Length: 104
Image (cartoon, rainbow, N blue to C red; front, side, top):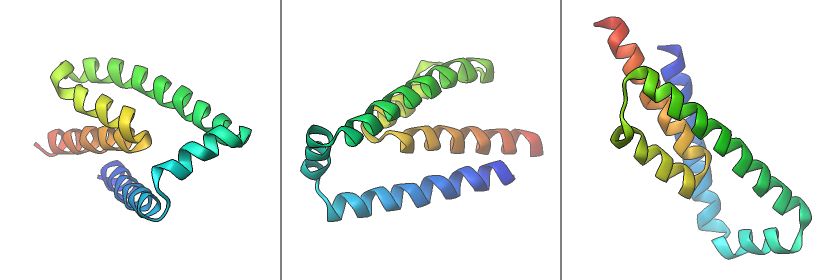
């Protein structure tokens, strides 16, 4: 239960924060930061590396859980488009399913 609440809270909080930032600063501002400041590109590359490693973990974890590609594909698409939000969504759903199966 604690893992589900933690992951769901992190997902909601980060998603809300992301959409607030996107509403305030458009995507062009982000792209310009990548182009003109080396720290912006470093953070972007770091995010790509981290997300890739977690997606590899998710692939193996989902197979252990008995999930097929149709079940995890939405999380891959979310991660490619929104980064950590897709990863947090996977862990929220995973923890919900584990919590549900533990109480059954």
